[in-house]
Image 1 (spheres, rainbow, N blue to C red):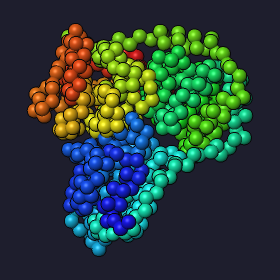
Image 2: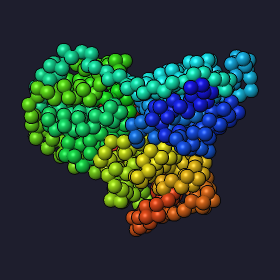
Image 3: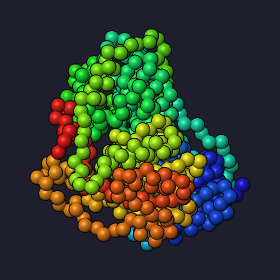
Image 4: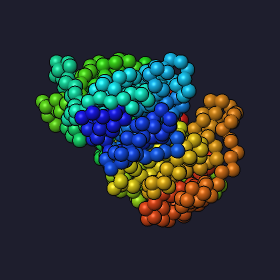
Length: 555
């Protein structure tokens, strides 16, 4: 059938199973938006307040569902406004397709109104980016983008489409969407070698990363951990890949991980890194990280092998297939004594937060949330101290229920991510944990929450300071609080009300659970101003570039 380029875009979206997109219209994108109007019975477009919010929403949608998130923008500033969102998705390997408009092909390269070369701008922060200059090439380009986003190590792909390409016509024939290529194990001869290392280990641990969740391999990981009787510590991106209540789950690893995870990393004789990349926030001193142990890396991306930490063996391929193949041929292992040692370490360090008079601990808030939230409810976060408290105290029982910016650490990520997570999971509740610093970067998206009546509970951990930066200033900069006490007078309850959203406040410990229960019962958007101490720190903490021997437990 003969269709315009704009109609081909919509047909390709439907063909790829896309029912929800996020974006913001503009001049160069008018043809596309005119077609979206005609396809509104098949494609639900969520209009955000800002393109960056749309990109984070597409990201949150992808993280929480496993589907490809889609963001659509106009040219120029509309396209550049999603750069941070693409970088966030890229470093965390999140499948997204960004469709940007551009000026007409005859105006390219002339510094035309709202023209940028977005393809070159985003090349380092996407799996691929390309411009389509002929309408006849459009369908294949979009199909390629969706396949790339979900193949191998997943990530964002950008397709830039000049305005005349969306108005020109071409023949279109629908095709069944291509299935992402399953990456086979490229070095199967290493399986036996790794199995032998596992059999000879008496003190193993598994370091699980976001690759487990990306590959939908949580069940295989849990089964494998049970088989080899190895405790599992998770990167920030890996939280939820094994239930927090599972006896083998040690929780978060790294700079703000538990004392027991740090000790286990320093005392184990085997580290199995599964879908994890040895970030500097995990392996502070990369020369000493696990130096006493054999290190095995299970990975889909060959570029990650030996990139950050030298490993003794590795298996390259799809993590689900790797875990299944490794389990075949290993008898049930038993490391009861090792696990008991780790459980003792859990009790050796008690963190007593310095709060000041009249304040309650952030831990109290998360303990109440753990009682109220269902196991499949979703927690999204922004970035800062509140994010680390969430990683420490939130009991993630299922994959894709902890949505956070890991590698890029993007303040302002949370509100868009919560919107996208809610749109992808309308049968679940979404809670956004943010700080007053991060919230000031994305509070414009409250209008989106209200416009679509999304029942997101926004909890602002309000300490009136830029908490994480301030904590580093305490430790490493002689308590010189440069620009981290902003003295803002924002009334978050009044702000929420001005958007037509219910605003609440928690100012004492006895208000925590009643306010949270009231917020959840409303089943509509709510903002809770949660007043916490500016002096509460995220502890324990291993300083950057250091090891468990340098752990800080009080300050």
